[in-house]
Amino acid sequence: MAVQSGVYRGVSAQDRAAQRRAQLMEATLAVWADAETRTTMTAVCASAGLTERYFYESFRSLDDALTAVMDQIATDIEESTRQAADEAGTDPSARVQASIRAFVELLVADPRKGRVAIIEASAMPKLRGRRTELLHHFAHRAAEEAHEMLGLPRRSERENAVAGLLFVGGMAELIAAWLDGTLEASPEQIVEAASRSFLGLYG
Image 1 (cartoon, rainbow, N blue to C red):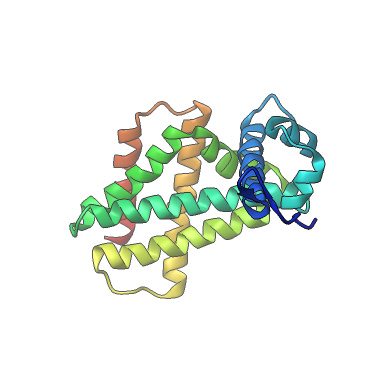
Image 2: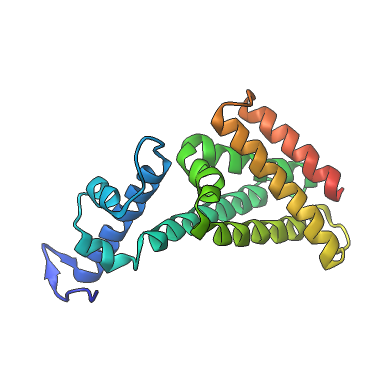
């Protein structure tokens, strides 16, 4: 749907559309993470306080909105972990711990992000493909970061894929159990265990 041109109360049409998209993204996250609410376009629009007309201004379908939320969470994770590693200095162990701690802290600050990206997305057939793509992306990033943080020689593509998926897949299961409450552990215990795992795989 085309965005109307013009300025209203000092806000351009493009900015208003961006604000509505942000509202819908937040509403999609809130509805999707709520186990007691069925994830529908109607529920998302009601949560955002917007009509379906504005939903279609930003997204082609509900799956499109869900995928956009997943992608935004992945971006948040990648940016926060990279920044934390860079701020930790040059010590490899400190960089690994800082990166994983930033990931865990992001989930502590907003558990909904971990729930939808790790737990809920796996239950939706149309999103499993994107979830798998993101897991492989982070597996590749894990291998790259091992080389950058630990200064290790680059392994073969197959070795990197095996080690990366082992780490990322293990982290996904660990976080899922933690968020579900079936695993009792402090955030620091999660960080310590995951850091040892990463260093063990690549160190």
